[in-house]
Amino acid sequence: MKKIFLLILLMISFVVPSNAKDLYKKNLNIKKNDTTLQGWKAWRVTGKKQLKKYEKKNKIKLFSVINNPTRLGGTAFFIQAPGDECFQRKEDCERNSSTHKRVEAKQTDAGGILGEVWVTYSFNAPEESQWQKYDPHILQFHSGVSEFPPLFLLGISSKYGLKLRVEPLKGLVNCDGTIDERQVDEDANYCARELNTYSLIPISQLKNNVWYDLLFNINFDSDPNIGFFKVWLDGDLIIDEKGQTLWKDKPVEEMEFNHANFNFGLYAQFIENYSQSIYADEIRKARSCEDLKLNDLGYKCDDLINQNGGMLPIEIEDIVTGEFTYN
Image 1 (tube, rainbow, N blue to C red):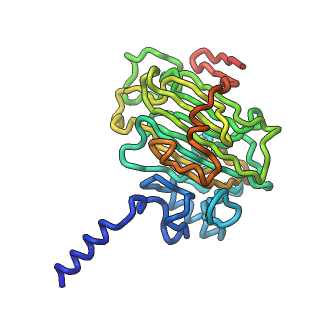
Image 2: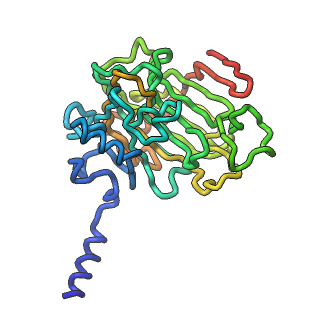
C-alpha cells in the first residue's frame, strides 16, 4: 500500500500544470484558466499579519478578488486603502514616506527578473476613489536589494496624470548627494542619481471606470548599452528608451538579490478620511511577447513590435544638484 501511495504521489507531481504556483488559490476563487495572473510563480502580501488584523476589526477586505468589473475573464482584483488609520507594519507607519498606506502583492520568484521580460497590467480607477492626492503608486519594478531604491514606479499624479518614474538610468549615489563611490559602505543610504518622469496620460484625460492596458518590455541590465525599456498603452508604443535598467553592484550584503521584482497594489501617504482604491487585472509575465498570448486582449505582437516612436520624459530631476529639466 505504501508503494502504491508513493506511486500516486509521483503521478500527481508530474501532471500538475506549470502555473500551479501562480496565485490561483481556492480561497481567492481564481480559476486556473483565468488570466488575472499568469506566468508568475510565487507571491506574498506585505504586512499580511497587520492587514488581516485590520480587516477583521473593520469587517473589510483590502485586497480581494471580484467578478465585476473585470478586464477579461471572470475575476479581477479590487485593492483599497482607507484613511481611518495606518494598517501596515509599525516601521512603515512611523516613517515619513510614501509607504504609510500600503496594500501590496509582492512577486517573489526565485532569482527575480533578469534580462528581457514582457509584463502586462490592466487597471481601472473607481469613480469614488480619491486617488490623485500625494501621487499614489499602483505598480513597481523594485530592486531585490532592500538597500536600493525602486527601478520603475507607475503612479497617479494631479500634476502629470498617469506617470512612470524611471530611476536607474544614471546609477546610484549616496542620498547625501556624494558620488564618490570609494566612500560607499554597507551602511550607505542609496538614492537614484537621476529621476526621469514620463506622463503617460494627462490628468485631464484620465477617466474613471475605464480599463487601461499597459505592456512593458524591459531588458534588466546594469550595462547602459544593453538595457532598454518600452511601454505600450492600449496598444500604442509611447516609450522606447535605452539605458541602464538595473543597479550596478555595490558593497552591500544582499547583492545576490540584485535583480528586479514586480509588485502591484496601492502605495500612498496616510491621509485621514481619504480613501483610495483601484481595480487590477490581466497581470501577465513572459519572456516573449508571443508567450503572453495577447490576442484575447485584442492585440497582435507583430503590430506592437513593429511600431516606432516614443515620448521624452516630461521631467528630469538631478538629485545631486537639485535641478529640474522639463520637456
